[in-house]
Image (cartoon, rainbow, N blue to C red):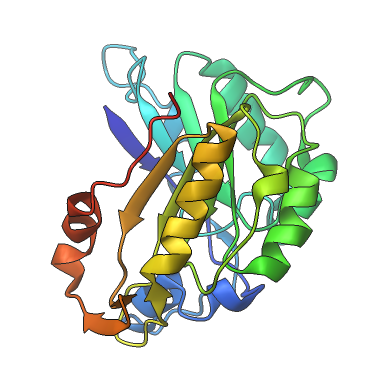
Length: 240
């Protein structure tokens, strides 16, 4: 089973990829200030038990973690140790998180982190060459058991060949969604795919985004079709 666990909510925009953040877009409908980071009522979700005494999040579940904030944001420093403790307790569950603040990794991990908790995947997201060079320099050195690179929203052509190695479990690529979505060019996607093939790193084209250019022609693609259109391209690569 899959669960979403947002131990805290809210974030501050950090780079170009944040401009059309979906959290801000959704919060705006409820007049909520997305830049205020606050602990949520679901903070203890991973260790909550039902009437039978069993965990509500069952063994073998995948828990998508902190998708309405950034797990490494400074505002959550006082809560993070307890979040790590729950992940240790639930070693039978896989926690999956994505961060733009990998530069804070070294000061945010617990003392017993070692080479990484085997049940925690930490993905690094990069949207352009500037952020790729900045964040991936930290990421490739970080002791993390499961690593994935997320190029979403992809805002330009990116060369990350020097950061790809067999320890990277996947590179996922996608365009930007929403009414104000910026352009994603298919040539940028194919360039990253070629880099993954050369390094034998699995590649996934996750979604086209709403504003997609292919062969010099720009298409406006409805949200409901963005993932299926990416799958139809048939360019995913298993790394074999």
